[in-house]
Image 1 (tube, rainbow, N blue to C red):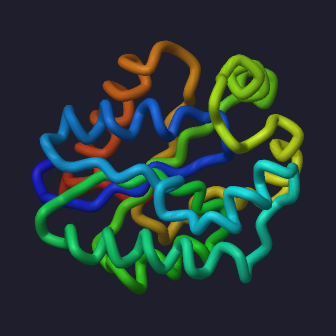
Image 2: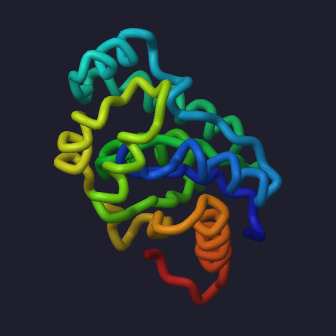
Length: 175
């Protein structure tokens, strides 16, 4: 990327936001922030118990991520955040207007297998249904790209960096 964007790595649980995010930040030479670290303890407890968050739970979390992104404006950074709804992304853009979104997408079966294989994460695979039910992909007027998560983390990162670089081309249209 030619300009110091803040990139929000978004998608449902299990798409690899926490894996690809730091790799992408390293490739771009910018800091990384783990979106899960912005959750208050009550959110973690709720999700750990298998209860999906509602919007009232998400607003303070999104605002905290937005403050981080705002502080990185003009400097660049990568932050992971599910950002499943347009309203959530709008809230992040209100805090950090230059933010772009990297939507990690993939086959449900692949994502479910990845979730089942991970350890030490508070988000149980049982919440995947609620994540997919909530998910609204990027709209045509949103700055960002969608990248499939099939392949190794390094392959996904390379495809993501290339797609984000294409956003900086003057003739590039939002995707």
